[in-house]
Image (tube, rainbow, N blue to C red; front, side):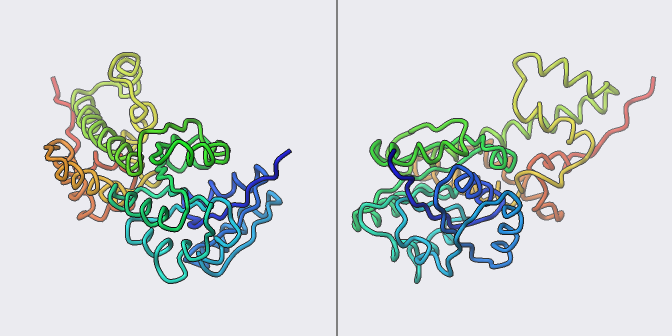
Length: 302
């Protein structure tokens, strides 16, 4: 039996924390680092109950020393540049022949830049943004869209399987991030339509549960309808994927569309709707809080 590759995981947030935990549970040696010591402490407390042993490093570079595969899952382009390319970044600790797998949602330009930086040091690179939200991370059921070489993905895939339900090689470096942009554009458009549909059903005095049951059995069905219609009608948004992060992702998508000479009017409009919710203090609410910008109407009498 071949030995398990040594791994490092940088970023123990809402998504990265459970993913690192799945690696440890699957028996991979893990060295972790988080820029916030408090977050690292919370991770340690949460997973220690499962008897999982993870070594913590003081810097990204230290965590990457001796690692066969380094995983990153941080906030945005700037965060990723800091933990990979900055002083004490992981590239300073990785050896030639190692592999960097980035699960952050970033711009495609950043993914292509990292691929070049890694290649110059003889290090493999896969951009591998994920979809499935916190629940997908916790349950190990993430969809992962990957950019990079087939050879690099073949090394990463067996390890990622411990927290994935689907892994798809989309194309060269940057393709994974572009696919994630398409994913977010789809979600934003669906939630905009779903918000208006809920308000229509409310104003007409329909039974909202029955309405959802009726239309989710046909072509209108979606993950968002199945999972967010009940919480949207109840006005519950204190969970899930934050609007602040969705706007970051849509910004990347709109920039890439402009780079390609494409119009994305629906995405641009929904992004502005999300800006309205942000301005009202809803930036940390779930993306389904988009409905909150549409006032409820009392059903007409008679």
